[in-house]
Image 1 (tube, helix red, strand yellow):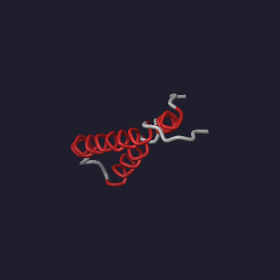
Image 2 (image 1 turned 90 degrees about the vertical axis):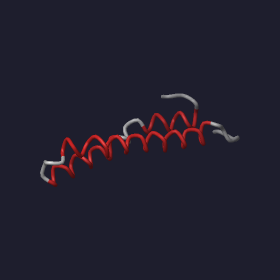
Image 3 (image 1 turned 90 degrees about the horizontal axis):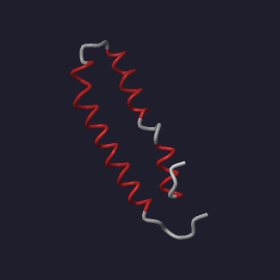
Image 4 (image 1 turned 60 degrees about the vertical axis):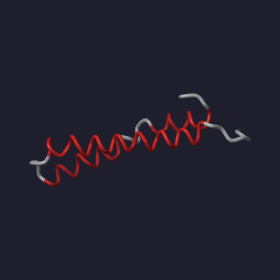
Length: 71
């Protein structure tokens, strides 16, 4: 158990926010021209899936923030 603060937590939070911002901007800029003509329900499914995809690497990232290891 960690007893002292570590630099990885604030750096990790800022890195996570920056990565999410970049991901959101990329999705918002490049996706609408590709799926703009699709039915709304299908667009909703695509945006829902992309809204959940960023969670996939989150577990390893949070482990790194807490322990300093990636696994």
